[in-house]
Image (cartoon, rainbow, N blue to C red; front, side, top):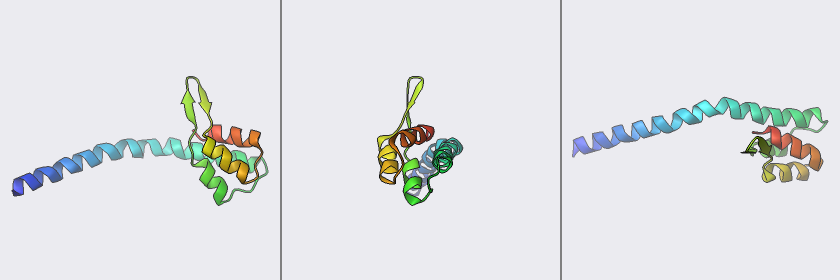
Length: 95
């Protein structure tokens, strides 16, 4: 019984390690895209507050050679007072 528990623990540890490595590896790129979205909003003359930060957390999606803005990002930015065109551009940068 102790051997079974020990094997299960080792298996879970290996699974956790294999899942965490891609997540840690992806973080810098995600952070750069998030910052690019925030920076665009700031450079466009808008205040960067919690609503903008929340919106920029929604990643754009790659469709072939193009990036498509996440609608949640666009809608949140528009609700925060950003123009639709600037929201679209900012959200594309969040990829």
